Image: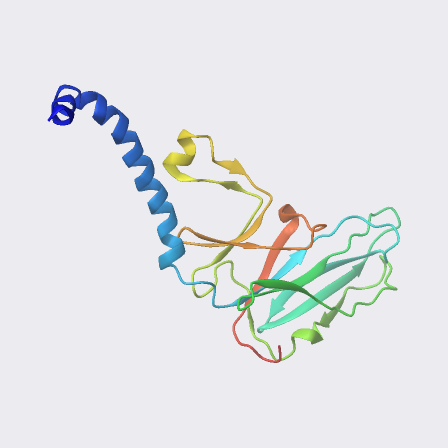
Length: 199
């Protein structure tokens, strides 16, 4: 009886305490729901990293592109004053949620006077790639951008700049674990693999 009397006499105080807790709980639940309702990724993703300048590497620049569903590497020679980088190609496997490097056999003896050379990435032969920012299942690559954590995150200063590399889709976030030396800010999506081919 005394408890009910206290609640009646202090209803405003009780509401002032409970309402923020209810709101926080609601938004925490809303942020967790996508993990339960959004399906995991259904496609592998090809990623390109820039690597870091390395004077010991051949003085070439490499660009990875998709043409007619196949991945190609275009290589051009660099001037002696340029800093060669070490771009690498990685495959995110949606089944195992792991990443592995794709070997690419590139010419190393080009000079800046030589015309660019385009070679097919033979390790991906038989696999069809879609050069779109969004996968057919809705996932997109997010790298090193400001991550909005919603109203609760804004209230508590949780929105932040992140160097993580992730796949995102309707609130679900799948973090991609690249080798430590690969910066999330230098990672680009080359394309989504539409068929299994020879894995």
